[in-house]
Image (cartoon, rainbow, N blue to C red):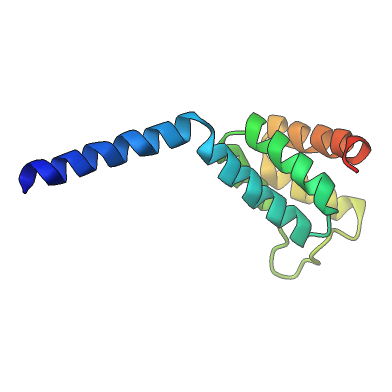
Length: 113
């Protein structure tokens, strides 16, 4: 019985490792990014392109920082002024993450279609 439990645990860890090694985490992350972007009004083909690029180029910690772009209490869902938009960018506090989002949006808006 004990050997069976150990074997199952080892096989589970190996399977999880292989899933991660072959891009399982990246695919899940890209799908979640795509879903959030579509919810925010980005067209699906552009969101799919951006999700893949962002999942490839950003760490999970950087993706968490991008959550600071979301509206806080008292703010509109979409920034209404340039000042409000810039304030949200300052909250991210990660130049690389902002750069990846910007370049992904530009590239994907021209290539997705």
